[in-house]
Image (cartoon, rainbow over all chains, first blue to last red; front, side, top):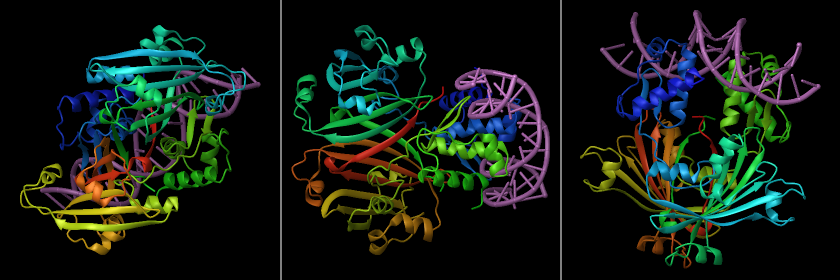
Amino acid sequence: MNNKYQFIYQSLVEKIRSNFWPVSSLLPSEHSLTVEYDTSRETIRKALEMLSQNGYIQKVRGKGSVVIDIPKYSFPVSGITSFKELVEELKVPYHTTVQELEYIPFTHEIQQILNAGKKEKIWKVSRVREINQEKIILDTDFFNEAFVPMLSRDICQDSVYEYIEKELGLVISFAKKEITVEEPTEKDYTSLDLEGFSNIVVIKSKVYLEDATLFQYTESRHRPDKFRFVDFARRAKL
Amino acid sequence: MNNKYQFIYQSLVEKIRSNFWPVSSLLPSEHSLTVEYDTSRETIRKALEMLSQNGYIQKVRGKGSVVIDIPKYSFPVSGITSFKELVEELKVPYHTTVQELEYIPFTHEIQQILNAGKKEKIWKVSRVREINQEKIILDTDFFNEAFVPMLSRDICQDSVYEYIEKELGLVISFAKKEITVEEPTEKDYTSLDLEGFSNIVVIKSKVYLEDATLFQYTESRHRPDKFRFVDFARRAKL
DNA sequence: GAGTGGTCTAGACCACGAC
DNA sequence: TCGTGGTCTAGACCACTCA
């Protein structure tokens, strides 16, 4: 662990998750934490700020840091968290089928979305996600070949994110998502077990790298009864 | 403006929104900002951290702070942003009808959700939101009388949040939301213009005050074709 | 009044990118 | 090598809560 404040953050997360400090109780004061971790107060405050941002604590002036509910995970929303990460966290049986893996034709609208030049090739990967033997999610990802020169069915079968982060060394930084509800397309009907549902939840994500370049565009289509999205939001201070 | 870093944040936001620094350009370095605002580097960094959290910039080590797209607003998701705030931001004609305003019976399940004692009274407010003359959203809010002693149809007609923050002086701090898609209930059919839609988007929100006490529970039910949720997420550093 | 968190300072050293 | 942002320190003063 390189950073002191990230080490302290992780240490505190573990204690909270293990109920060492139960919900509604107070963490030790910032001063006593500086003693415990042999560091300065600003460093402790950085770790506490991360706890607060991630929904573990709420700081109350004059009192201390109150432990609040541990944040839940959202259901498979492809994009910034990988499908594999989520589904392994949730410990449910899953299966991925690679449906398409190809270059899209030039002059495709996706080229514009990805800010790609006219002669840059774009990968298209479409995958069906099965959970508990039901085809629930249809993910379609687009990558510029400039960032991802090679893709194989094996990589797509496993986890594209793992390949991108570990093999290619690219660092995913942030994503913008838009959630809407639409009517299913022909492809939704043939690819998924829709069971009479007449709507589909669509999550469109743009994923950016550390240097703020747009790197991936994804459309993730979910059967509505299995869709669940959990959000934690702080009210803007302004 | 009390705080230096919030003043600097706001000043920088204005310059970004007015295209003083266009998208993809670099902000001045942290050092030169300390000179311009006559302050220390950590204070500048606090303001830049807020810009980054709110999706205005992306910091790149060794290069500087890159301006990225200005964040968009999500469509009416009652909870932490008030309906009135959003709808006035979007500049569309709207109307609110107060359908119910009453105390709920004791031993109601909502009492448990709100962590209320057995003899504490709970307000229930249900409101229909019309946008462009269509009944699109059904909001049902629950408040503990301990926090909100009085409610009137006039207050509910206007904005409960404005009343809570300005009159009662309570400070809303954060919210946890859960988005799912469900089948419409009888009440959805009679209250809203559903136009044959057989699904409804449900947002359940728990809203907390500054001292981390749970203060409000809301169920917001949206006609699916008019629902849109925009999210900006950073990948966790761990 | 003692203890808490909120803000702010003026330094320091490091890791990284561009030249 | 130089300028950038990333981390860290050891103080200071203030605003707030609680006994």
